[in-house]
Length: 289
Image (cartoon, rainbow, N blue to C red; front, side, top):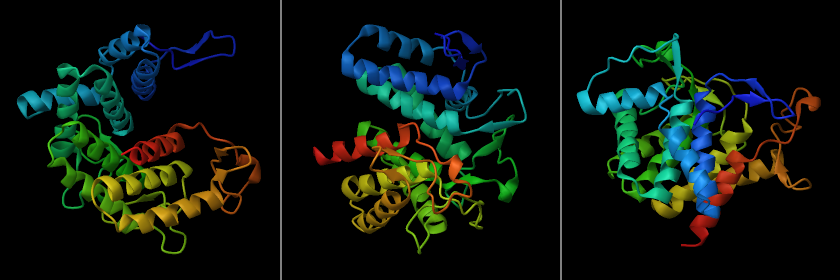
């Protein structure tokens, strides 16, 4: 299946380029749509999108798993792990509705590639950007780390272990979570700041709304599923911070910026619900067990 990157208001294609981030979410969305409706069309679209093989990271992960080395020649100079992360998330959702061994093989290959090739030692952290041809950190020790993505990966790996991934990946998840908490949590606010460098230097001190939602999801998950009772306090402070600054109870949505932190109130807008809905979905799931 192919997807346009964007369409205009009439539904006509506005940009037909392959957008791997968008393709990852197509797999994710169609898997969830199938889980709710049991409409086979959604499942077919999800599977065919996964099989379209538009992800260089997945291709590299498969090759790494088979050969322990890379011969992939990436186009471009840089590679972001973000579409790779969301594809991993999408394949977890697709596996949950199919129990496909072929899909699970890709999940295992991606987890192994992340742990063996993308993860940096000894920080136990994941850069945002890599050199495309060999997946080395783009800017050495000054490579940006999106702390929200560290905690997002921690949750996804832990959930994958719930589905059958080897327990050793919990060590990776713990390392990612610990790094973000150590270098990103503001003692004053309880919120998660945007970025740091590999060696823990303070980066962008902004508070990205989506990172607060991911922080709430991972701390609640680890507190209940991994016995990290100490994280309840982190969760409670994060939730208070989000309710004060990003949760718009009147409109029943989240905003992208807090009036307190925004440099321009006209830039404050309602946001698409993926991240905050992911948190609420996980909270409801945990409440059922």
